[in-house]
Length: 327
Image (cartoon, rainbow, N blue to C red):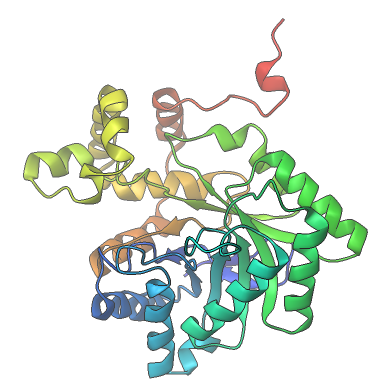
């Protein structure tokens, strides 16, 4: 397993992060435990979840699943860099969503109980809350940090200017601030190259791309559809995207055949190769999918393949503001 620093911190994390959004509804608990066992076996030490994951059963179910896995062998907790998130709606009750100081502190306590642990290594703000001032957000997070219940703070689904606001507010308080940003990033979705990734790199933040295969669209969807084995790629964001990108996906899968590599490994290897990327968040539904993702760490795409991928799925070509300056 390859390891790297989490942004500007001294914390070492694996270059793949095991995402657990499928645990509960798509992956049952025994299977989820096997996937986490396999991840640790590979040396993958970075585990990501969220307080609202498992909503297909009930919100919080995924954290409970992970907590029961830790309880079976307490050594697992010390081997794991544990990340979870706060900010999504947990119920229709007032103050049970967003980034108020009350909700941040109460949600952290609830996550700790579900996860059966005394600390969260990386506590991520799941979405921007435009109603919450940063002074309030950092006040709550400072409390949790001082209590040792949270060790690092990250963001998720932020814009570049949200990152800047958060970091400047943290600097005024003389605290470390955000150390990571988790964003949607893959060959199809490259808008973060305009401002978000440059902002994250400027502030020394880790970039943790979620959905590196765009919901299965880049995981060999056409071959799976022909074979009748498509699951995730036959639902969600992949469905409308396939209609829009069908010709490009067909050319992409042909390129993968020329490389004699599985499309999922090629798509993941591309994300791993991007400047600023720390650890893509993968969401395997099986041990076999996890093994395939780990194999992508050893795949170095040749320059001509990278050029062809860039032609098939062009990004912004430059970061802002140069990207929209015309002569």
